[in-house]
Image (cartoon, rainbow, N blue to C red; front, side, top):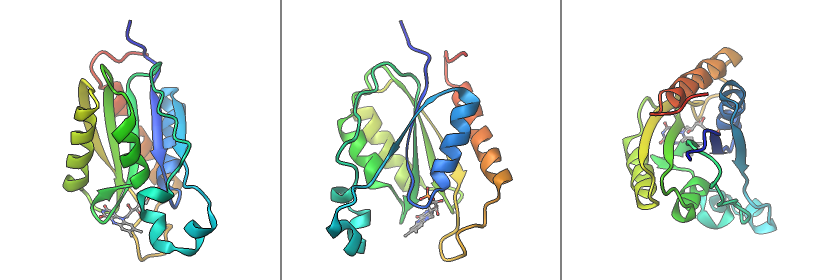
Length: 170
Ligand SMILES: Cc1cc2nc3c(=O)[nH]c(=O)nc-3n(C[C@H](O)[C@H](O)[C@H](O)COP(=O)(O)O)c2cc1C
C-alpha cells in the first residue's frame, strides 16, 4: 500500500527555505525535517567549509520509508543545490517514491541544479519527479526583500505542486 503522508526535507542557511517549508507543512499536513550544519570549531572559523560537504549534518536521517511523496527543498548557491541535500540524495532510498524538488533561489530558473537533483533522485530509484522554482532572497541586498505574503504565496505554489502529484490525495 502506498503511504500518503508527505515528508518535507529541507536545508536552509538564512531562513528563507525554512520559512517556506514551515508554511507548506501546515497546508499539506506533512512531516518536516530540517537538515543542520554541524557546529564544530573548524566549521565556524573556516567560511568555505560552510559550503562544503564535510560541514553538513553528520546525523542525517536517511529513513524515509513511511513517507510519500517526498519533497526536497534547497537553496541554490552558484547554480548548485545545498551540499546537505546533495549528500542526502547520495544515500537515501527513494525506490517507489514520488519526489518533488523545490529550488529556492533569487533567479527565476536554475537548470544546472535541477539537472543534478533529478539525476541523483533517478539513481536512488524514485518513480516520479516534479519540480518548482521558488523565490528566494536576493544576495547582496539586505536579505529581507521577501515579505510574509511572499512566503505564503511561495508555500501555496509548492502545496499546489504537491497536490498535483499523481495519485496523491488527502
Ligand atoms: C553565495 C550565494 C550564491 C547564490 N547563488 C544563487 C544562484 O546561483 N541562483 C539563485 O537563484 N540564487 C542564488 N543565491 C540566492 C539564494 O539561493 C537565496 O538567497 C535563498 O533564498 C537562500 O535560502 P536560505 O535563506 O534558505 O538559506 C545565492 C546566494 C548566496 C549567498
